[in-house]
Length: 241
Ligand SMILES: C[S@@+](CC[C@H](N)C(=O)[O-])C[C@H]1O[C@@H](n2cnc3c(N)ncnc32)[C@H](O)[C@@H]1O
Image (spheres, rainbow, N blue to C red):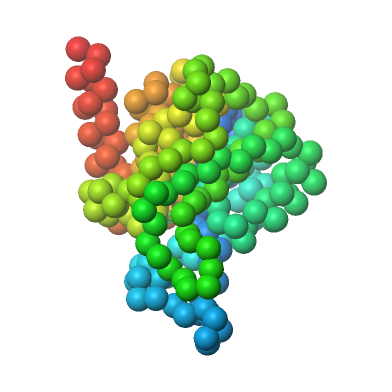
């Protein structure tokens, strides 16, 4: 068994094998998106400079090629009941629906992060102003305690400040992550994020009194997550004084 409230700098497909069956209450993951970086057709899909910049940052950080679905099989094994939130882009939605709804007969809810000031990426296409977080459950727990926590659309500007502060190109909002954890787990339960990035899920768990386990393959992001966790623990200790 891996220790609770620790993060591990390793490939999660290897790391997950060390977690016992039926031991995790909630999974919250933000895996690499599956993004077609082949460019557009001349004349109807001109790529702007800003799109190229965003894409090259994602390619450099290995964040465009999706992930091995064997990881999902491991996540199902370690969860007590299926209770999983997955950030994804539109290309990935059909395969998740197939896996969780058609094969595993889960219920689905869709949360949206609506960005009010997205970078204009394409001509001749809709704006890139939302991200999807799919919530699949069968025995999962969903119990928002108030009106705000029940909302499925989270509206904010793009989080440039967090990106600069923590140096991760696809960092997710901490307040939304905290809300998901509050809604779908109880205090002292265990939350797993096996694509931890800059550590947002672990920080949210500390602030919401949950246990966490995290994996991050890239040492640069792992170190950033460790630093954020240290800061969050100090913040929590101050709060409790
Ligand atoms: C989209 S980012 C997650 C960002 C995170 N939600 C945050 O707020 O910072 C996905 C992360 O998964 C990591 N990753 C990709 N494949 C992995 C694997 N097989 N095992 C562990 N981490 C992996 C990448 O290095 C990247 O930092």
